[in-house]
Image (tube, rainbow, N blue to C red):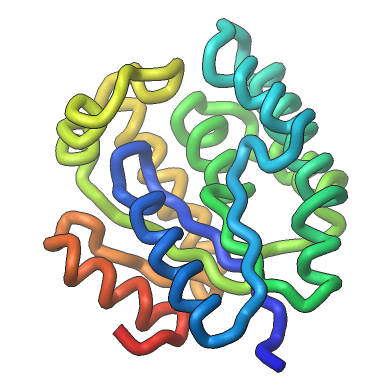
Length: 203
């Protein structure tokens, strides 16, 4: 039996990470893995309702952070932990690294408070592997503009996303063994090969 794995996909909006989650899920299922694909904020009825608030309602950074971690707590209890306990592989579009990047880096919110919330909510749970899609902020902005109407985060300026990217870099520096950097600016087929190799699948 393949060991259960918790794999997260991170990057600024427009980095292209969501495109590759379905490919990884398909390949894992083809080899016989049971796979759960989910996202943050979201993944449960309560967490999706909180996601809607975070993406659409004006609020300060503390409120935003508390809502994100409340959604994460429900998500962990109802989806992630049961799936891992059942031997399934969990692929998650964003997790706590995004909170440190967006609320910590982008918003400039207190990292010490975020670390405390992380400890309370996650009880030590971290991904086994995190794929970080590294894309210049300007290129990501072009992709977002072509893809969809902007939410509260996507409508931020380039300086915000540059701070978010730096927040990711700081997070990676603290736990480099957990991360695989993916050059998301490369052609789609090259990115896909890099993603599959990072998760231990033949491109």
